[in-house]
Length: 273
Figure 1 (tube, one colour):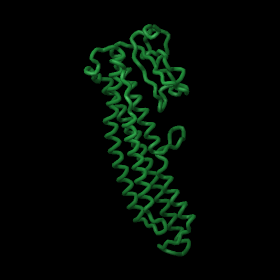
Figure 2: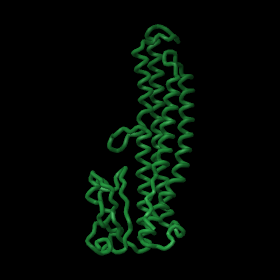
Figure 3: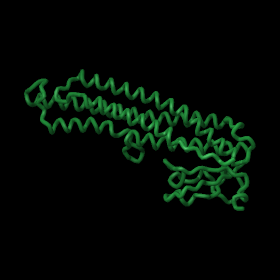
């Protein structure tokens, strides 16, 4: 049986689409606000709708994670069984204790990352709506007019842009980079599913006393390229002059969006042959 190479694009695209749809729904809700005749009640009503949209999105993303992370872990276990020539691999796949814990950890981490996106969007939208409401009311008062559409076009354009920008940035990462919600979500779930598959394969291999692995090849052009086809140790104590996988810098291998996998190997000499 060939080592299975699952593709998660369809499932990931489905989740990313949910975030795109939610962002569009929030844009639509904010666009309905009459900025020239705004009131605290209007802005509060808009924020209630935004909260509902994000709550629904959180439920959908949590369900997605609960379904797809265990699937990726299972794929990793199956890949390890096949690479180690375990008979009837499809029917003997099961999670050992460490892989059960892996599922729980990756599910929790992924849900936390996705929740951070919606929390950040909600915080930024609330802040923008409060600021825009105050600016609009001040602009009307400055002109000596209360409650009529008298704000000039430049001010209205600026207020609308401020509302739109509040939705556009889903999260700011540790490096200070600003991500659109759907772009960040795509990166997170691709990275987490790859991590789940890779780590579960390593766990299964070690449990079956296979202490080496081979880094996959896919023609990388970044820092990962030098690791393609290399043999690594899965445990530090394994004999041989091979790098330990746990000491490889994440800037060189297994970085966000990294496609590389590890194929377990019992004897590195077999690879050389």
